Length: 258
Image 1 (cartoon, one colour):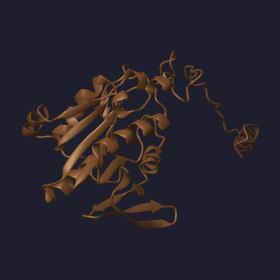
Image 2 (cartoon, one colour):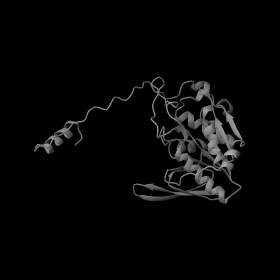
Image 3 (cartoon, one colour):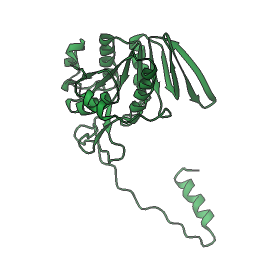
Image 4 (cartoon, rainbow, N blue to C red):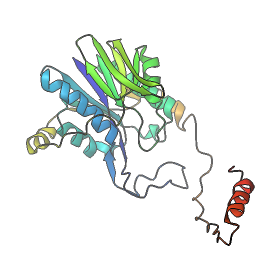
């Protein structure tokens, strides 16, 4: 089985993330870059399947700058077979529609039985990309799964909803997105780290994929302005002199909080 796992390098959530006030994009130099944790968990789900099915071919795929290669190698060290790295300056700041178009073209080029991704990235948090890919690939989708089971011709899983838990399934090929409810990723072994240095990584541009990026020298949707968050204002202190309840009620009403 050929399984493609979508991964993304994101700013470390434990750092102080910031926007570039010039571009409105995330300032990726302001904090360390890491492999998104939800993508690690998605990869772990596939690796667990591959442990029982040694013939499984696991391909990592990412659309990221050249600097993300270290993160790609880290993911390869966990046990994936190879990687596809889409890197093109023309794609800087690409919105979801362009990102989906590029990844869909790469997936068609690579071929797949199953595409697995994290539910949403910790930087953009849009949560729409897996569904957009399923539409472009004309494939069934199972989204926001908290557990997944892969078979020879089907994929199934459970999804938590406000009404309970739903069990869903679809024939392959399919697109699946997983939540952070899945087990954490394994730790790469020294053998895995050394092997990752020799694993094949195919680097592609938009032109290689037949996507006319020259048409999109600016993203289809752009940030028109960005400003620093204003400093936190001093709060309102209520001293109870017998009328604290009245003061609190008046404050809530004045701020339309009640």
